[in-house]
Image (cartoon, rainbow, N blue to C red; front, top):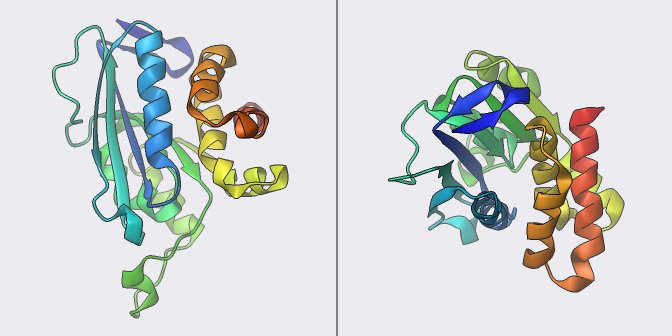
Length: 205
């Protein structure tokens, strides 16, 4: 069984959905979570959809931890946790979360081509928050890009989100940092460690 008391999660399989757009580091974050799960002793299955990612399209990663996981695909409305690297992606995929699930949202707006070239309006934050609240009260908004930019590199925003997720789950930072250290170039290690703790602070404060 997988048990996270802080989230009141006690389940045979933990289902994590990551959504974003191309260039945000969604796949790196997914790889970190997959390796973390293995290091924690779980069976891990992962599946990704990122065919349009190079052109700013959606990037979706299904990730599941458990004693035995038979499929990586998360059934509709069954994700325990969703990490959204962009606000509109959170709104687009919120129906994947189970009632009372947990959502971490990067407070970043990337206007898709369908909006920028038409009369369609990008929804405001209140609209996004209210829609997500229809599915779960557990939403954590994190200024990932601003935090990463303050450290000198906006690309570390994905690690800020991982830090936020670790704190939300009530997990110690060390297992996460071990994996991050193995996944990023040595010259960016200090940056990413700081970014990780910025994410933890955003949830713990």
